[in-house]
Length: 375
Ligand SMILES: [Zn+2]
Image (cartoon, rainbow, N blue to C red; front, side, top):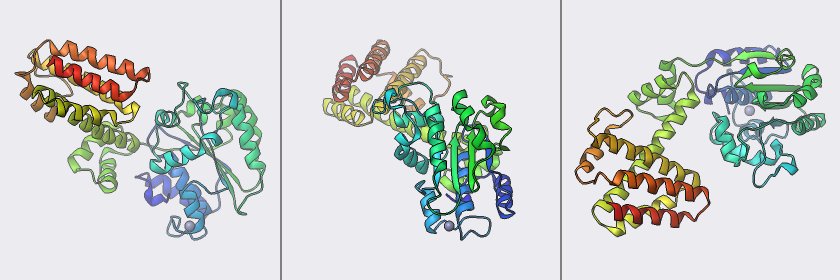
């Protein structure tokens, strides 16, 4: 990606460009940020700027073969070390390292360079709660950097979330971080630099990536994602200056809207005693991925709770959107009070079944049948 593709952060970008143009780039940089501020996209754009031979006007050209390979994260002299752990496919006896997941890394980061740590773990289907940059990875880092540069230029090693390196791994890297071979650049992207060993930090030039002001963040959302101004201001205000968080919230609200529409048509079908419509809804839900199916059930549980609270007359339930409020009012006279506790049990059973890997078509046809009978 080019600097032009990075949202905001113009001061840091200007200082990186100056550093590169004056030939004063440190062999080890440490970007320190909070999740979603954009240190990874800045690091990627910086590597592309350093490597591009056609760079000008403070940015890489974006079209030369080098830029093209870097933007797809397939340049042979651009290496990554990222936290991973065992999955169903890469079991612990295979000693999981970044290379096992490199294709998933490329597609996740090219799709969204503001990737969150937990989303990365979900992408690779990790079984452990947290990822690790292990001593096996440090051996990989040393091996990769001992190779000659494939394209005759510099070599770049991006370590994403170096705070996930264990002590053994960190210690193995101290020497090379202190004195890498000429033309080797380390770029560490940390979201918790306080957890790094001081011996790592002292070997790096630290660059703090700061949050954007809500006004600038809103402008970026409008410019890059065609979000409405009022919506952009709302998300910019609640995301604490983190562009990645704002994006995530926008995507989340898209999911909520989808889940609401699915749940509403299921409920409406059952209330109108249309079995065909209830079956159609259950088929639509079972076409979602398993994680999304669970999210749908969780959304529906929350929604049922809101319906119940409003049926008791507490009109000031928090976090009810206008659309939800209108629908709840429309349904309130038609839904029997006993339905809420039944729906609560039905949805919880569906979540349990999904966790036990029961066929999802069965889970949701059962769920719609039970709703149909209970309403
Ligand atoms: Zn270029």
